[in-house]
Image 1 (cartoon, helix red, strand yellow):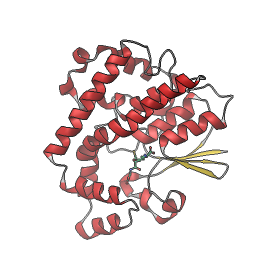
Image 2 (tube, helix red, strand yellow):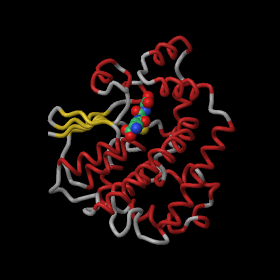
Image 3 (cartoon, protein in one colour):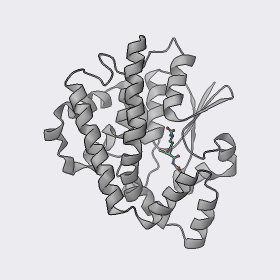
Length: 253
Ligand SMILES: N[C@@H](CCC(=O)N[C@@H](CS)C(=O)NCC(=O)O)C(=O)O
């Protein structure tokens, strides 16, 4: 029995949802409302001491961190359609891209998302109440991120994040000149990873990148990923985001 604790089909939640849907695995969906800070509630922190979504529960085995979750699904369900190459070389290429997405992409797109969206949520909470909510966030980095979201990220940090995203866009464009998917001939967890963290929101969040001109292969890749039934099914999961805050979401569904 599989259960996924997740939020909207965006970023980390989307990444795990796509893998489950692509593999055709039935699962119980448990929605965690980030707008209500449910991820920091004691009952949820008992499930994930880091107070973040998503979390996979497979017959009582709790798995956190999306790259780990998605590879766990490959190992635990070998008969489901694979999203990981069979060869050692293919696996290494996929993991190289996963590492790149996790270390050099996620936090930078996330910073812009938090600046535009989570900041609005953080500022909607009254002062005393906000401090109480922050005090129960288990990870120091996340506590700081919530505080910064409330006060606003610095222009220098945002500019650096944009630079990192530009580097990623150019790097992926270069790879797609060589191979149809990030890892090679096969659509893998690396494509899922870059799409969920970056690809899905590029047009909407960074129109100034002029993507159609700068990275036409990436634009085509985004369309190919979006067209996949598993991706469509993941996007069809409930989205309770306030429409006014949809900087990450919306366009796709
Ligand atoms: N490295 C983690 C990151 C998880 C993460 O950042 N989750 C976000 C949602 S996209 C979250 O729970 N944010 C709410 C918070 O940190 O308070 C993963 O890959 O799962």
